[in-house]
Image 1 (cartoon, rainbow over the protein chains, first blue to last red):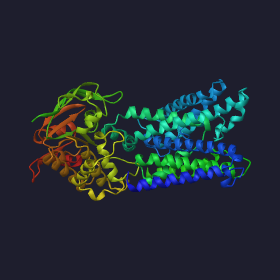
Image 2: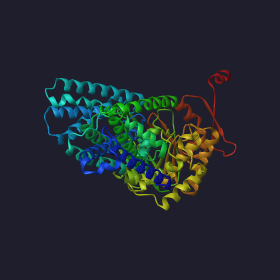
Image 3: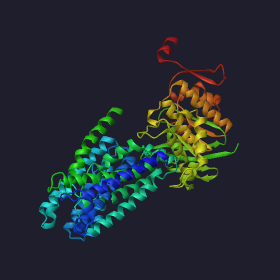
Image 4: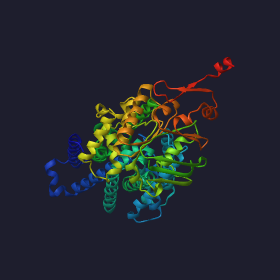
Length: 320
Length: 267
């Protein structure tokens, strides 16, 4: 890592710390900074802290998944939400709830759903060994829509009362309903991101091309399988706790490629930090813009992400 | 000369179709071997089998006496490097980052490059006269510059065998000669064994010590340019009329194309 990238990473750490502080202070109940730590406000502080923590996991995890998918598919538009991976995870989680499984099994069920949908989309998009940019996104979005439809259907016919309140699943939320789950999910994200970081150099080679990576001694099929599994694992875990939050895996990697360049040894930590900061910020806005109403966080990320998606799509067409 | 890679009764191809039929030949240490033949004759397939992108259906390939499929891919890539026709890179890596990727087979995951790796990468850049491109972005280079950088990356692997798949077909004649001169220099000075697929028969004649002419997945003829590039061979395989003279400078065979219209007028 060059001194320049170290400086940029340090800056990102500082930004993240500032955003965390902002997220803890701001909310529907305004608390002056110094009173925040008094005994009176301990409850609120605890809740907000957990919520910020969850924001860090979700933002960082989804961003790193976006980086990974973009590299292995060599497609700038790939990210878990647009590829239907989040949708598959959502369906898995909803099914698990309907079947009455304990919450610790939610990430597992979501992982299975995510994996199935990623394999489905990959094979749908494949045309003679190649995956054209548009075809991948088209298959992904269609699978995502179909899966959302099934989720809505299941929620509406289910007799499970708890589930009726869970329409938020479709838009994402960082509301905390299960403490155990946060730490389980956090552990999965840390594990997954570390594994992806170990494969940073492989991702560099793969982003040039699969044959090129083979010529550099990388067992491409094995590495690709590992990376799809890990991406599905992280996405599954995150969706099972926060629902489907879109576009963050698109916004952050592109911003960071612009800032630190495409080298994954720097890009992965940078996206981790920036994704965490971005989502904590979005969530803080979501709960403090029009109190006491909470705007679903997926709405905010979509509003930012959709224009970026269109710009990237146009840019891609120009190259062709 | 010692045999570096022995290809023995090789059959191979893609999913359904078999492209290569019973190919047997040796690559000798230090030679400059050209593989020529019409479109679809199996040139690229043969090269991809040798670099293990494809797996053979039948037959053996022995690299320094060892069956290639039993070698670890990483070990093989420390000895064999590959240069494709053209590399489209969608991500804007710097030239320096691309060239350093040539060290991947030599380094463990998470292992940082040492001074030695940097020196090797720098040498490759200066060998390919692309040192001044070091800080440029790969997606901003011209096709010729990019190909030089890709060759520099291949050299950074420190191979003893370099496989090239039509590396000059997207380049103008200036760059073509520049790249092939570079390969010849590496072949002479570093004893690098070069196996190159070429479309241009005159370039193949000029630069290669030995040629393999493929047709419909089989070896049609193997030998020196003088033996392989006769008008009879070319007319049989390419189904077109040519005149073969000598290049006045190098006295290698020189192929002149004859258009169909002229041929009618002559007759």
